[in-house]
Length: 429
Image (cartoon, rainbow, N blue to C red; front, top):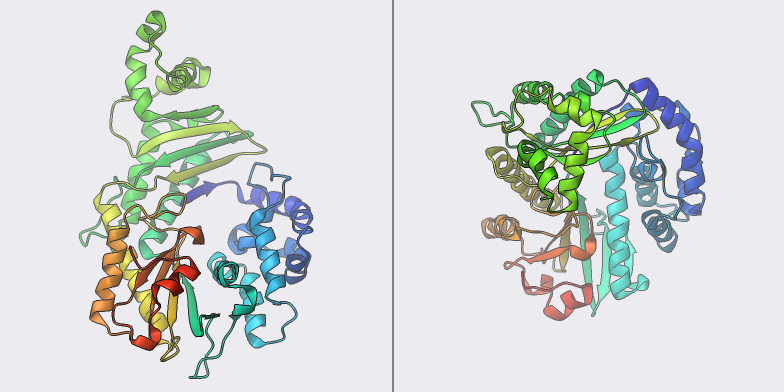
């Protein structure tokens, strides 16, 4: 999660000025050009309020930065999948709906269409494009997302995404408000400044839900105590833990030459800089615990301030987020079943993708899969789901997806080890 502060007028001006760059970047991908109509009339859109489309975010440069001139594997893969599955050439209602979702201004709507195509593409690499099709009909006159034909079996696949949970929305709102509070206190030169926080110090109300206003108050007061706006113009990365250790003995370290690594030297160079000196003397105590953990600074094409949230921390807030996440995951699976998206007497897979999994690392690997597996297995125990073969879960990379077998599936819905191996999975967790 990232909270961003940039002047709205400046952001809109940046967006309009960079639309030609976006058109230039997408020009190498003819199917995307056609689907997005080369971003015609996008100048009329308000960037902050409207434009969070997944593809547009890829072709625009970072705010205050530059986009790489190299080709984008993400866009190349998406463009190829649109071609391979004949999305543009189909006149079906489902194809039109997929294109509509892919071009939608909402991030999660466009992500859902992208995910379906990526998953279909990954399966086609395993079993062949001729054995992978989109929008198969179900016997109840509904449509599934993907059909896999393999080893004389028809496997129906339903793909869904986890959207933001209430706890995530609250944290996003908190860091957006705090970013605005700090950003407005900065000089706002041509600088980029980033602060990282943990969720450990967020306040909970009497029901142990995140208290947004109280949490904002704590983070703003701590930002004032740490004089974060005085860090504008710094270069490089510094962390408070190292500063707390080095600052009291910095002079001794320099005189004795007891500098143990490059990071120690970077901390000392920062503290010796004009910005570092002015910042450190403005703080009442560097040793006090703080929800802020580190800062990054660099030059930029304008002013941008960001707050990032550390991935995993041990606190009641993190436990609350994990609990809410597991409940949402179970609801997502139940919703697909309740809506009649399983084909009776055939193998059926429900695939759930989520970018903000609280139990996943930055590479998309599950580092505590037991909790997730336990929640899904509990769901299986509480319901029969005889037509469901299992559930596949993944974050940012489908190559790291995990399969959870449903022990209650009937014989016609089961996938054996050979079937799963052909799809790139194993029954074993």
